[in-house]
Amino acid sequence: MGYGCCAEYRSFLTKEEKIGMLEEYKQNLEKEVKGIAEKIEELRKNN
Image (cartoon, rainbow, N blue to C red; front, side):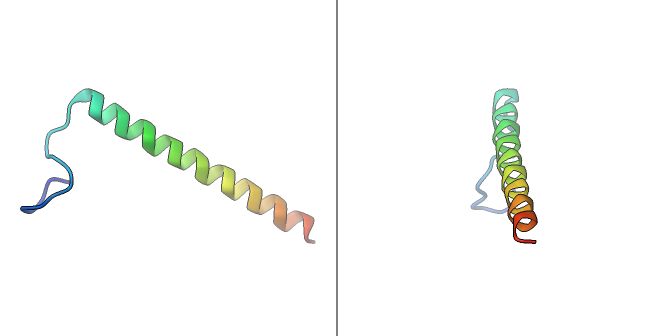
Protein backbone atom coordinates (compact mmCIF):
# COMPACT_ATOMS: atom_id res chain seq x y z
CA MET A 1 0.00 0.00 0.00
CA GLY A 2 1.18 3.47 -0.84
CA TYR A 3 4.22 2.55 -2.94
CA GLY A 4 5.23 4.12 -6.24
CA CYS A 5 4.02 7.20 -8.04
CA CYS A 6 0.61 5.85 -8.97
CA ALA A 7 -0.38 3.92 -5.87
CA GLU A 8 -4.03 3.03 -5.54
CA TYR A 9 -4.04 3.55 -1.76
CA ARG A 10 -2.74 6.33 0.41
CA SER A 11 -0.04 5.59 2.96
CA PHE A 12 -1.94 7.03 5.91
CA LEU A 13 -5.57 6.11 6.39
CA THR A 14 -7.97 7.43 8.98
CA LYS A 15 -9.35 5.15 11.65
CA GLU A 16 -12.74 5.22 9.92
CA GLU A 17 -11.17 4.22 6.60
CA LYS A 18 -9.35 1.31 8.22
CA ILE A 19 -12.57 0.13 9.86
CA GLY A 20 -14.42 0.37 6.55
CA MET A 21 -11.76 -1.61 4.73
CA LEU A 22 -11.76 -4.31 7.42
CA GLU A 23 -15.57 -4.52 7.35
CA GLU A 24 -15.51 -4.94 3.57
CA TYR A 25 -12.80 -7.60 3.89
CA LYS A 26 -14.89 -9.42 6.51
CA GLN A 27 -17.94 -9.38 4.23
CA ASN A 28 -15.88 -10.84 1.39
CA LEU A 29 -14.59 -13.59 3.67
CA GLU A 30 -18.13 -14.39 4.83
CA LYS A 31 -19.25 -14.72 1.19
CA GLU A 32 -16.31 -17.02 0.53
CA VAL A 33 -17.25 -19.21 3.51
CA LYS A 34 -20.84 -19.39 2.23
CA GLY A 35 -19.61 -20.45 -1.20
CA ILE A 36 -17.38 -23.12 0.31
CA ALA A 37 -20.27 -24.46 2.41
CA GLU A 38 -22.48 -24.63 -0.69
CA LYS A 39 -19.78 -26.49 -2.61
CA ILE A 40 -19.30 -28.99 0.21
CA GLU A 41 -23.06 -29.60 0.33
CA GLU A 42 -23.16 -30.06 -3.45
CA LEU A 43 -20.33 -32.59 -3.31
CA ARG A 44 -22.01 -34.52 -0.50
CA LYS A 45 -25.27 -34.77 -2.48
CA ASN A 46 -23.46 -36.09 -5.55
CA ASN A 47 -21.97 -39.07 -3.69
